[in-house]
Length: 163
Image (cartoon, rainbow, N blue to C red; front, side, top):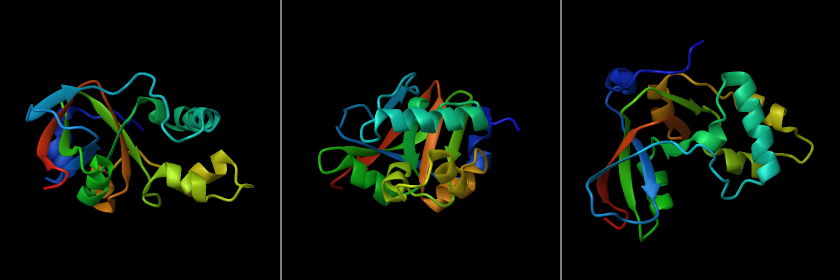
């Protein structure tokens, strides 16, 4: 199953719903463009756990989603929480071929990992959470974490987090 999509299908597949990201600081430009990281360092996830998770994603989907993703959500409230009082919320739009991964059962993978039983293996956890790389519309409706990989993403300010 091919997981890469053309940027030209975004409007049709998202059905007009927005993909949000909370940024910790404000910038003056209304629109900025950036791409996915090549080797994202985990903020909270233990590095060895992140490596095992990415090995699973790569074996399953061919992409190291934790290392390469721009983390986003269909939830404006979740994006506001990440922006905090000093940041801003932006709507994201792919400007190049993109892929994404999400779970209909998991709002945030780090939280699911922290809540998992110590005897549950990473592959079991990830399989139980039913990660998938299709149906962006349902991903946005779920308001769960969406891991987006794209070499060029447009981020447009909606408002400052305190707005």
